Amino acid sequence: MRYKIIIVFAFLFSTHAFSQSIEKEINTSLKEKGKLFLRFDTKNSFITNSKVKIFGVNLGLNHNNTIKYGIGFHSILFSPVHKTFNITDENNEIKEIKTKLHFNYVSVFGEYVFYKTKHWEGSLPIQLGFGNSYYKSTKPFQKKLFFYKKFTIHYEATLIWQYKFLRYFSLGAGVGYRIMIIDNKNLDERLTNPIYTVKFKFLIGDLFHDTVNLFH
Image (cartoon, rainbow, N blue to C red; front, side, top):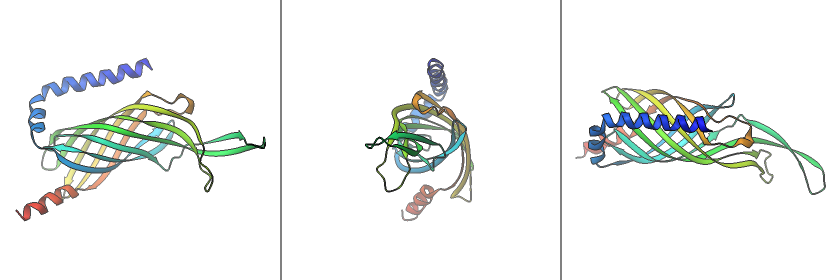
């Protein structure tokens, strides 16, 4: 646990030192009126040795396309991590319960766009997630059972590059890491793991702003 906290604080310190060098740009951007945005995204990661896809929806403010921040909700899609539990029912009979791992959380996020040209964009998103992880029974039409449900906190940092083309489309890729600050030890699964993304995006926000400008 101690080494994880040290890593988190080391990264936060380096981020702070870096932000000092570009303080003027950040302050200038924050003086601009923030524009509300809604963003859906998916990212790939691992739980122990199993590949998972995490879906998220983010709501926040965008200042001058340089500083973005807000809140989000995230959850595993199609969990590949399974576990079987044996429980004793009211008739003292042993029943086998099949379950899937769930990992859901609400996040507070911030993003700094440190590089911008006509086609290229580089950004550093970070987030702090608060949620829970647990096993949930999978048998349909039956009362759902939960096992080892526990509160978790984690930190994520990612480096993302994006290439824009044909005005309203972009391709992007990113790599990062998730560090569990408060983990669920009962799961016997490793949630601290790398993150990676590959994205194809239709820039509907740019299309909307261009359309609005046509009528002004």
